[in-house]
Every structure is written in structure tokens, then in C-alpha cells.
Length: 372
Image 1 (cartoon, helix red, strand yellow):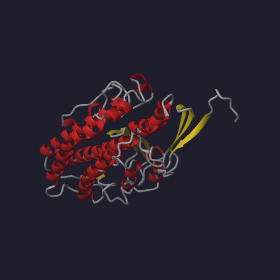
Image 2 (cartoon, rainbow, N blue to C red; image 1 turned 90 degrees about the horizontal axis):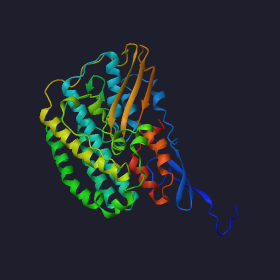
Image 3 (tube, rainbow, N blue to C red; image 1 turned 45 degrees about the vertical axis):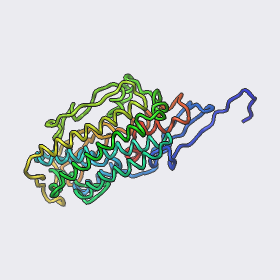
Image 4 (cartoon, rainbow, N blue to C red; image 1 turned 180 degrees about the horizontal axis):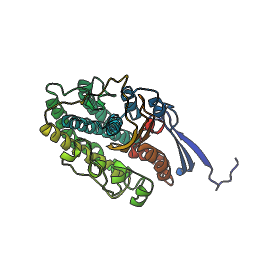
């Protein structure tokens, strides 16, 4: 294309799927005019895992090992959703101690996921020290998971009827040591990242998601709360041990990348508060309500829709049983399709090229969940 001296040419820029400014097997195609983004197209189809169809071909218990892979940074809400859907259809009562253990696992997973989000956001604006800190600190949580479940990343621990086993001896003390350490680290995160002049200058006023658009476009979780909507499934539709726990719902009103960062920062403190209450108040008793032989287990006909407040937002499963030994249909409703495709494509328009990566990371989408 020829151009005159006063003509500006539009051009495309590909971010990802293998690029430090994007998360995982994911790509965003930007159309630019100078350094201004005039159009964005998200592309999440690089994994081709087909989790939902795979679940139809496997026994109920076998699928626990599949669902946790739908969102690698925060896998446990998938196990919890899947198990709770079966429990609702089959009328299985989960022991109260198992509910407390499940809630502790979910909150530890939330903190680990938010630490990764911090590191990604910081790296996108050049603060490369913080990703090293957060990944190292996250490893302390993964070590707890390894002791409890045998797996660092995929846990396969929350199962229909409860959890696989009780807490190991001394585990509550070690959890307290980790959360106390993480709490002591938060002021250092603030100094290096949250209150940094670089972060404030780069993130304030960038990628603004208004309250009206957040509701209209289906935002959930921290992204919705950062736009001024005080909504949290743990409070609005309580499950597991959350009805017995006291915690706040952090919100901001600005709806920009910085507000989303502040909400996640405050959520780590709330998760620490929740975990301490669980350790202090967890009742004694069984941790699993025994289920039938998994090779012959038939779930009664029926369907269920259950939802969980994950670190990414609302995670939900629509589960259908036809009375057989395998699920008839499982549909996963994750937050990342909304945040990482529809909302992202809208927020990137009219922003500058150097802000694209931090807007992407501020929404904290999970690519495997999009291409499921």
C-alpha cells in the first residue's frame, strides 16, 4: 500500500500464543493505527482439549482427574463444582468437616492464583522482580497441596461425598505458618508494586470497565467488584463452609486496571482471614460420605446447576445425568470466556499498544478454560 506523507497506515500486531505479554496458549490480534489500538480479536483455540466431551466417555470418579485441568492456576473450583453437582443430583450429604476442608483448599488456591496474577501484571510493565517473588511465595502453597493431596498443581482431592483423606498430623500448624508468612510479605508487595509510582501511573485510568458495562457484558468476580458491584457467590449463594465464616467483599469503583489489582490485593487478606477461621473452628468427624463402587455407580436421572466463586470469577457446572454410569452432559460456565474474549476485545479499543499486555493480565483470564 502506498501512502502520502500525512497518511497513517493501519497494521496488525500478533500478541501470542507464545509471547511474554500474554498468558498461556492464547493470542490477541491487534489492529493498530500508529500506536493506538482500533480493533482487537481474541483467539483461544490453541489447546483443543475438549474436556466437556471427554467427561461423557468416562466414569463419574474418573472425571475428577480431568476437570482440574480446565483452569491450571486455580484448579480446585472445578473439582468442587463437579463433585457438588453430582451430590445435588444423587442426594449425597457431605460431612461438615469435609466442607471446612474444601473451603480451605479453595481459599489457598485463590491466594496462589492471585499471586500469579500479581506477577504477570508486574512483568507486563517491567517490574520483573515481583514475578520472582510471587512464584516463590506461591510455591509455599503448592508444598501444602503436595503434602495434603500428593500433587502440587493438580490435586484430584475433592471428590463426590467429601474429600479423599483427612488432614495430616500438624497440617493446620503448617498452613498457619504459610499464611502468616504471606501476610508479612504483603507490605513488601505494596512497596515494590501496588504503591509503586510506575504501577500507579501505568495502571490508573487504563482499561476502564464501567459499572454499567460490567453488568451488561457479564463480568464476575474481582473484575465485577472492581467496577463497584458488591457481588460474591460465597455470600449471595453460600456453599460449603462459607455460611459459617465471617469475611468482607472488597470493592473498588474506578473499574480500571489498578482497581482490579487493588481488589485482588484485598482478597488475599480476606482469604487469609477465612483460612484462620477454618483452622480455629473446623469440627471433628468424617471427611467422606462413602459412595458406591465407581465401576458400577449410577447417578439418578436429573440435572443440576452449581456455581462457585473462583479467583477468576463465577465458575459453574450444568450437569445432566441419564441414570447411567457416565455423565450424559456436562457444560462448564467459566468466567474467562467473558473476561478474556468479549470484555477484553472491547477494553483494548482506543488504548495504546504498550498498555495491551497489562489490560490482558488485569482481567486475569484462564486460556484452558476458554478452549475447553
